[in-house]
Image (cartoon, rainbow, N blue to C red):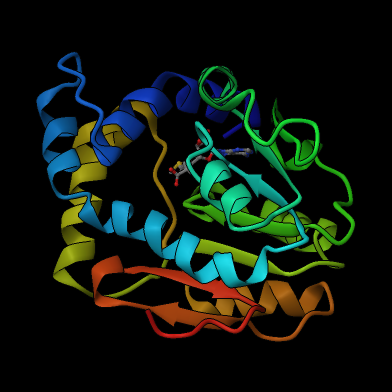
Length: 230
Ligand SMILES: C[S@@+](CC[C@H](N)C(=O)[O-])C[C@H]1O[C@@H](n2cnc3c(N)ncnc32)[C@H](O)[C@@H]1O
């Protein structure tokens, strides 16, 4: 599927997706999305867990979040001491909302910026900390390798869906099929840690540390940061 098509898919979907997952009511969302919103406590947990895992490590660092959506991580990470936050997303609707909501955050001293970009548009990010939540589920192996390569001089934390034989994952696959998979042909990936480690190895990096938690369901964090239990 060409990147432009994925961009259109996410541009149409992202604001309703965020509102149903993170609790901003939107009566224009259909029934399936509202059901999904009701069972999305794992995604709300993922967001707060990311803040708690990252907060001890962001002081004095630039953070780059790819697939940032409307930038929900920006304010807590600046508050935790990040010296700058840069969010990138393929969906202009998300970037517009992020700019509207968070444009003035951080002032000149700790700049917060949002820009439309696909993963493959991005170049070396220096020693910035590279972060993503739910992005890997939508990337090809080449795109994930590209992210590991452009972030190789800094730490990383990425949240993704781990492939499992579980009832929860089966329900998720069914939801995806009914809600948009059969209509668009687009479906998220579920990956194994071994697959992620192979991509890391190809960019000369050691295997990932892995963080699991029952409230994440089949979501996991992979990172080279020390990840204490929550
Ligand atoms: C599941 S949403 C997660 C949004 C946000 N990180 C969160 O957790 O609330 C995935 C995000 O990745 C973005 N995305 C998907 N493919 C992308 C790509 N190739 N390059 C940049 N962003 C992409 C989508 O537009 C969307 O905002």
